Structures are given as C-alpha cells and as structure tokens.
Image 1 (cartoon, helix red, strand yellow):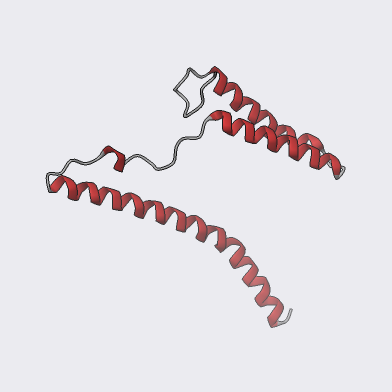
Image 2 (tube, helix red, strand yellow; image 1 turned 120 degrees about the horizontal axis):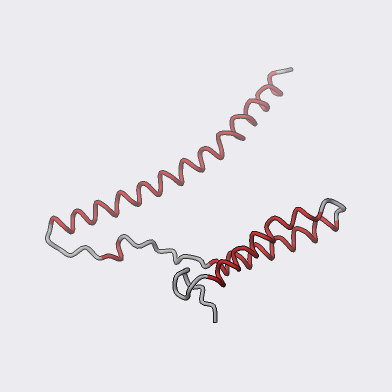
Length: 122
C-alpha cells in the first residue's frame, strides 16, 4: 500500500469511529452544562431569598403520547414492508416496527385518561 491509500484507510477508521463518539460526547456535555446552569440559577435565587420557580426544573419538551409513537411506528412498518416487497427483499422486516406500533397504540388505549402524556381515549 502506498502512503495515500494508507492515509485514507486510517482517516476512514478514525472518523468512522470517532465521529459518532464525538457527537454523543457533545450531546452529553450540552445536557450536563444545561443542568449545571439550571442548578446554579436555583442556588443563586435561594441564596437571595427569592422563590425558585418550579418551571425552572420542568423540561421544555412535552411528553409524546403512546398514540403518536404507535401511529409513527405503524406507518414506518407499513412503508418499510411495501418498500422491501418492491425490491424483492423479505417484506416481513416491516412487521417489527408495525407490531411495535400496534403495541404502543394498545398501551395508549388501555391507559386511564390523563396518565399518558396528551393521549386521551375519546
């Protein structure tokens, strides 16, 4: 192997493994930094005798309901199954997300009202 081919191979391995590790590391660092800043703000407010709002600790994201997850997975399973059938591959691969979606919808339906995010069975 010449130098150029070796360099490409080494770079591909380093970036192929290091890229995803770097992304995960950055996400974890960001979440840690955000949590630390929230806690420091709460401590400063408490030291000054100010009330600490409970909204400070509540996440900005609303919990997604099992209905939404179920519908997305059912659609993914159907789409994957049709795609695999079109290219003459085993279409049954689409059954995995399809049945996961059906399970989520079943959990959403069996859950009492108000217990599962915004999912209400009406």
